[in-house]
Image 1 (cartoon, rainbow, N blue to C red):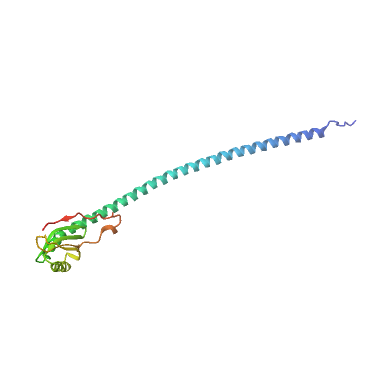
Image 2 (cartoon, rainbow, N blue to C red; image 1 turned 180 degrees about the horizontal axis):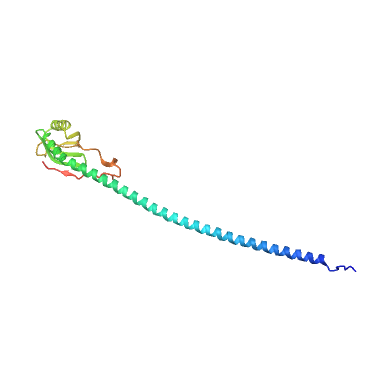
Length: 203
């Protein structure tokens, strides 16, 4: 006689498929977490490596900035040394000129004119003296104008005084020394030139 299976096989099949689905979901979620964890590890490693590269680059940039500042300092020092060398060279060349200036100044004196002082500041000469007349002062200025080492005379003051030993007038005039090179202010790195020492010569 035939047998009939009366067990609830459909319900069991449904439960089996449900368990398989749950296991698949759990496996998928676990795989997702695993992939996310591994991805975070990889990204974290990349970020850490990039941070190390950035730190290395910052250190190298700081070192290069220090080298650049040092080079700039050396260049500025070089310019200062070149300016000093130029000034020293110019002073060396101008040393014999002052001798010519005062020698020429004495040779331009006409009779009846006596110098009481000569001051030099840079290229400018300030001459004070006593003349028997204003005509002799004019002659003195013409002689300066035609001089090789002195030029551009300008009369600043002439005053007649009866108490002068020469019995004439006291005068003050200025002149410019010739033969000097232009000021070194235009040289690269040169400092502003200070006025030269004042030189006084008594007649």
